Length: 447
Image (cartoon, rainbow, N blue to C red):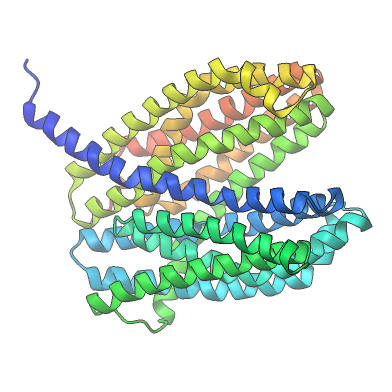
């Protein structure tokens, strides 16, 4: 049987759409970690206590913002679905409502962060010398939290409109502005670590301002209301709540790996930091494909085009697993050269190199998982993801604790830990999302 040339043309056209969304999305995702890197490089020259304080404070901030990523995901799916249904006014109205929710939640979290800063520093075990810097950074950067969350919601709205280029340029400009402001305030104005927090807050608020202008212009053009609608804000919050639970399950699994690594000795813990950092970078590449899947699936379901939804699922899975294979080969081959860049300790180097080979084996499956996650988020299947997220966490906990209890310290222990995380935990996610995608329950069409 000869291949259908129309199928080939359709696949190539869909591939072009996937890349047009995924490549700029990847750029925006990579730009965000540059904020932390710039802050670390600038504050690091103030002294070790300041850098330690920044590490603790940034962990708190990133956790708060990470848990609110549902603002982007829920808005992307909702806006894309409305656009697919031919309702740009409704789409932009949902985008605006999401931004109002983000602003209100950001103000609340900013107040909590400012008030709870001393408690957070103490709870995380900071010494008095480090705690004072952690509290200072948290309090000076807290006013930027509304900006950070509005950026998430606005980015989600633009992704739903299949515009990933604007968030890319804003994120890149924000990273540059953040660096300039940090240098000027930390050293020029002599504010020390407080200047770093203030610079980051100003940059985030400026990014939110620019993205708000973009969304507002689109809303006015479409005739959408700019006023906060209680019903719309509540609907966005309800749609985002399951995604918050899903994200929480992922964060708890990651925190559990740190707990296990800490029980396997200094070599395992140091190696885990390196491996998890590399894993995080790889996750950005795979997450870019998931973002493309969110936007395209939401659009096709909104248009009640089930055939196109299946086509998006098939092609994005091909891209995800293919990217996992390529990244896996690169990680496996380069592990022995990457390890010396992070540590001079030969044991830690061995732990990193060996563990990266294990990670590489499971990366094609990880690509599959990331894409399926994006597909189901784009379909608005948050409740299923929340339930199975907690289910996979429950399945992972005894395996992780068994590694902590029985695995040997050092290189072997770290290898077992990542076999459990990249293997067992990701396999559980692959099974639960894969079984869901095989059926049609998640493909609810229309607005």
